[in-house]
Length: 448
Length: 129
Image 1 (cartoon, chains in turn yellow, orange):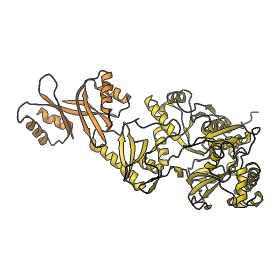
Image 2 (cartoon, helix red, strand yellow; image 1 turned 180 degrees about the vertical axis):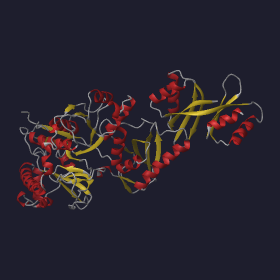
Image 3 (cartoon, chains in turn yellow, brown; image 1 turned 120 degrees about the vertical axis):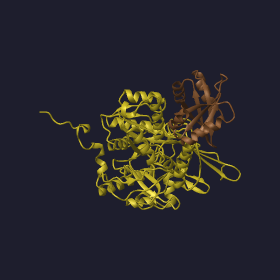
Image 4 (tube, chains in turn green, orange; image 1 turned 60 degrees about the vertical axis):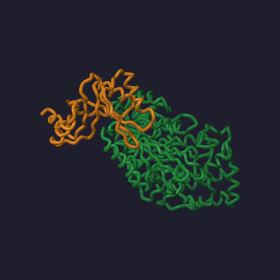
């Protein structure tokens, strides 16, 4: 007698790790409340800053009776982690700690996050559920081109991939020439990296004469760790024939695997049995109902190393009210194409780099490489966007090139309502990403 | 006669044109004729070279945006009215000149003009008449 295999990649319609994704809503809320209470009590006992802030507000753990009582609790911010550097917000002792991760940010001291073995298991669970949702299984070869180390990208996807039984290729970032060679030679089917680094890999493949459809087995891209637009996703999919999945996460909350998109692409399902989301008005700090856009706030209800209570992510999004056709009960947030930290004020108008990216990429024949340059004279701001022309888009006709420039200008102008100076530059001349890319050069004097 | 011309995109940045010429020199490609069209922001360098495929390959490998175009070359009689006669021919053939530049072949002969027409074939026919 031959029994059918129990493994997922052998015909089972659902991977066991995905079971929680479909938990009935009432059970999910009950689980969240249970975990929230436990986490608040734990943090109150173990994290002095949290306790002090609760006392200032006159809140005690026993006051948390329903999920909406979360609004009684104090917020936390990145600056708290920095002020309390290195371990002031940690709840775990060294004996309980398995691993640190740090994030540098742009200025000053880094932040340190502690992970207990259970925290790593929770994080791995989130990453695995994302991979399972993307349709990745044990038969896949996963190239992890996120940086390994203090940054959570590399190890996060590595553990997720191993958990799924993938053959993991831990290339980390850099040495793009070798990345392309290994991808082709080992039959890589899925790659995880920042979207900007994947653009770099696409460049390198073109240079080597490697056609993704013809010469590789690549079918999945798992992209995150920086904001990117739907237009960028479409561009990548059109150029390479892969499916570009979105993965969300942040070091403070765990790492990649906090949320991801399903095949219906309604947004990103948040694994809210571990990461409880709220949307608040960033001005008044009042919670907003599902459906309204505001700042995303997370409470880690399954973590012990550095429990984060009402952590303000600075990411702007909304939680959707309608159910996703995939059947998952985990709430969906809109994909994040804007971080409030990235907002630029140009001529008094609020502009997000993602809006500019969306406009540029609506013009076919423009390469997805751009740079936003801001500078100021005594009297005015200069706002320039440099865009690379592709080999294919270049023509011998000056009028046609001027037209292309005008089209780019119109596309950007229609979205942001400002008239930047558009400069066409040669292919390959703008800086390329080795991880997270810096596309905005702001040379304006401070205080403007 | 129709010949191949290569066009290269150049940013308005110091050293770009020199970089193109240096890349060709390194592969021993000789530039026969050259013209530079520019706008406030960018330019297009047009060249006729002695080894056309090698030039395209070299510049593309160096990361430049390169295009090949066909242009018509015509010699101009070296006397007053020579140019006028040539232009009248194109006029009556009903072709528009998109751009043109001249060069001297260096053997002391006549001046040579390079043309890009709205319809190269038609212009060539007009020259043969």
